[in-house]
Length: 460
Picture 1 (tube, rainbow, N blue to C red):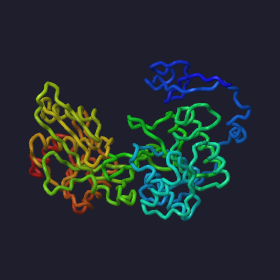
Picture 2: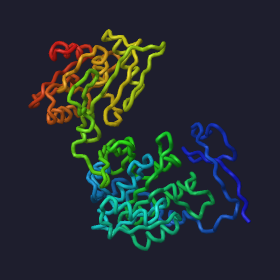
Picture 3: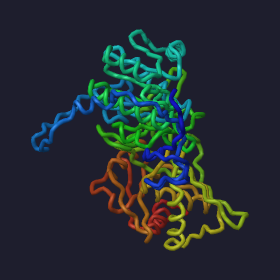
Picture 4: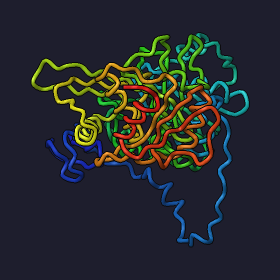
């Protein structure tokens, strides 16, 4: 009878240790060692890596390789195609992560039902029964007559069905539920997740199957399992947004077949997820009265410009340590902007509580949001409203200069299309030819931006 013992494996680099320790000595990550059971039985003579040895290739010069464009086909959901880079590619492996209940299975079921009308599609579920999947499809009003469903968690059984049916598109929901009999660890462990994902990836490349793996996330919001899982796959997508809200965002963080940082916007309805054609309307205020502390900026998400409302609340602090809270924006940049405003604009916030929020649950990481944050804070500090038809963008340096943002012309055209009549942008982003419907004010320093608001737009 095989004996079992415990080992500890790092979720970041996969290194194995005989006993637990706080820091991985190989990758220097803290608190990443996870206990798993390992069997001491004699391993089988058949190696699971035999297929790799049989497919070994020789060295070839790059100039001798003929590059071919990958043919794409639609997933059936236009917003999902946008995030994937224009559609699905045969043989690509996609990892889709997100919080429980945010809509991962709903989106994939909608896509698979549409794909099953024209191609061979297989939906493998390790979390739901076939009856539950049918009830969800019925609740969403989907015609699911041609979609093949398999409820199985053993990898060998799934591989046998794939080799027999050879579907064009495959969904695994989820990768944490699968296990292979080659390993003695429990499903969801580091070794099982890594091995199952590796074998599915090899099979997808060999048979040209477009594979989508659903991944669980931890309480910190990162994908559960080993970090190597993100390196194995071709594309990594994350669901963002509050599960209590009706809006969902799907963002690409890695894509070998397209651009990263693309954003897909969905609205959750009683008939599933619906793509939003004008996402800027979601992030702009719908109130009739425009209040102080609000400023509209134009951010760039992949190839799509989005208009987002930035809100700021500046209030007198009643504690020795004023609060600094930022939602949807970087906390460290807020501290830097406060120092720049004190040094170069003569505005003091040391005795003020400051709260910054990006409306709609969107997360903005680009530094072009600096100018909008500053103007929103000044508007709240002085209790003076900014013009509702004003849009701004621009990065602020430590010396108070305004640096240009990429694709400034596209941002301005998008703002003009949505009815904005004035824009304050870095001088380098000012267009050489006027843009119909919008007056562009180019400035090169943050204090000049405040002066432009005071002199040209009659604010402050």
